[in-house]
Image (cartoon, rainbow, N blue to C red; front, side, top):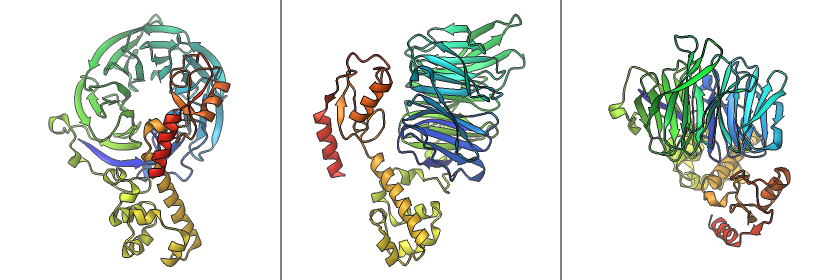
Amino acid sequence: MVSLICTLQGHRDDVNWCALSATHLSTCSGDKTLRVYSTAQDFSELPYSPLTGHGYGVHCCCFSPCGQFLASCSTDATTVVWSVSAGEIEAVLEHPGRSPVRVCAFSPDSTHLVSGAADGTLALWDFPAKRLLSTRTVNDATVVALSFSPCGQALASGSTYGDLRLWDLNMNQVFAEKNAHDLGVTCCCFSPRKEKVELVMHLASCGQDSLVKIWTVLNTITGGWEVKLLHTLRGQSAPVLSCSYSSDGQLLASGSVDKTVTVYDANNAVLLYTLNQHERYVTACAFSPTDAVMATGSMDKTVNVWRIQDGHSCKGGKLAPEECATTFSDGRTAAGRSRLLVSDWSEEDVGAWLVEEGLEGLAVTFRANNIDGAELLGITKDTLVELRVESVGLRGKVLRKIEELKGVSVCSGVPDEYLCPITRELMKDPVIAADGYSYEREAIQSWINSRNRSSPMTNLPLKTTLLTPNHTLKMAIGRWSTSH
């Protein structure tokens, strides 16, 4: 049986990746931030969260196996290493060529960190020394998938050209499957469990062809590598964007453009569950290394946390909405209320929000004064004085929380075409670049100056740096802003 533990709502843009350690959950987003939650405290958000060290959207995050460090990579061409205990930056690793970094991964013993970029380069780092060891290039494709084998002796990579490659620790290519996924690989991951035969491992990959594939990877006695296709899973009807093995290698989950999460029996290639609780593309999925817990992230800006109990099944392999139990605590929002604009909240919704934010002492006062969502957004310091909230600190905390709500409310309603693809913020001076896409003028100009005239959307060279004002889009954004 699968049950929904909670829904985390904090990001103001698409959730791009989820990562779980024994004690923490991390998520990253196009809003340039990472958020970190404690798995031991009902997924409450840590005081130092969100982490704000990146200049552009964050594509991937991963914990070191020891759990002490968190790595994240971004369009800003860096991989940042964070201290999990303090939330402080330990190191900033600039990718060779200053190309947007799309994915990163730790080796099982934490001695290596690898990153993959939009220009097709792989960078292998000595993690303890934070020193670049070597680089390799994969044609002109974007590297979007990386995973170390459980033995730590091999690295798998996948690119937007559809190739799946295997490398040794000297970054020598030892295997290449050129058309592993038609139209491109989107993710790959090794099973953390080696088979009974010591040298056999399993690798899962997914792609734009709507398939999940399981491969056997064999480290031969002679020191060579063999990779063979074992299973092809067809449980989803649209491109599959993410995949992840459970800690024991028994389950394999995947997230898709069709808005579903599928969970398979990895050994027998049997579909067990199809989860339908996300409202947009499912971009991320990750299992806990120590518990039967899974996190999934989506372009609906939410992260769902699930508990999976083996030995039970759901009717027809589906998880019905009524079977999901959503609970509440700091940092979590009920799925039903999260879909409403704050201005549409009822008095009960406001009361529930106060409890979640640790302001339960004000719930009775707010309810007695019939404060619903619209009233909540209009509260000022004077209003709180009138409500006899005497503590200056408490008034300040309430006002800060309301400002956060306003930011989420405004951003969640912005049509995607009004957001700059680079900054993911509402455009004020949109311009059309040579690639045909519209950007905020300052953002694309800065990009061109620092990225050697490459397109942020296609990574292909821009034929010209001429920027054309998009007057039609600017007027549309103006009309939308006025009406909201």
